[in-house]
Image (cartoon, rainbow, N blue to C red):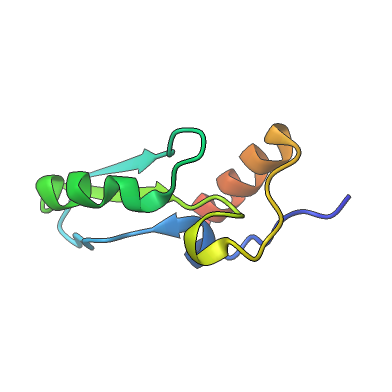
Length: 84
């Protein structure tokens, strides 16, 4: 079984970059949701918090990719993308 793409730009959305942030918050959308759900939260926390929203395969700009079939594999892939 092959891993999903590990390109961190595919997995993580940073809507409001905050180079001076002292904290990083990683947000996972609800089932059926997408990273854009966290856009207003990112705007509200801009400054002290660097918010990363996870974009799942099969959602929004990744809609052409197959959906997740193995939650453990996805968790591993998200972790690897976040490390980059």
